[in-house]
Length: 95
Length: 144
Image (cartoon, rainbow over the protein chains, first blue to last red):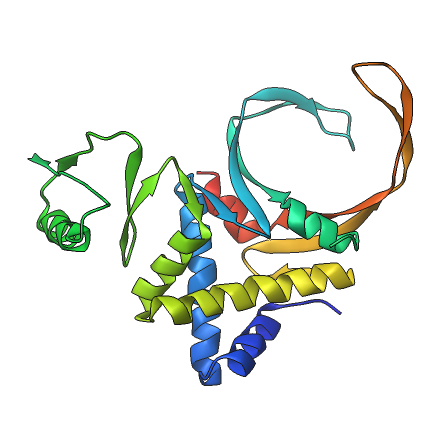
């Protein structure tokens, strides 16, 4: 089973005393803040979970692996995720 | 251009911030003297940020301000969301959040590695790590 936004909404609804539509809005707002922050080029650190980082990638020459064609990958910004040590240990059943 | 004196340790920090926001709305520009701070103006709130990293308590604060919640409630919302995601990853299943991205736990097999200092061969245990794939919405938002 895949966890989706609907499941997050349900968990807010069950844990806190908010109606469904409000729970859904809170999840939406939270994600919006997260995204806007990353858009501004800031990292977001959630202790115990991980860090969403914005990385600047330099321009480089690459190749389309399907066609073998040479191409230039332009300067770009990407989002990466670094898992926290606590979460990694939990996933590996050490915590 | 105005000059803003910021001291996060004083009680009237919130008042200063409030006046500052009013000025921004009026269009008065500020020069940030203390370079440890960056002012981030967003649609619904303004945040003074240190070093370009938002941490969980700042995320909680931003959520509280945007949605008119108490810090405690906002904190519970944030914690619930990330706890729920954590539980799912510990279980080994996927997370898919539209517009943000998806998480998947990848298994890495054990391999023989070397201690770079001594050159000794050591067995590196297999491990599981969460892998995040950026969603299209966020990818386009960030890369402009």
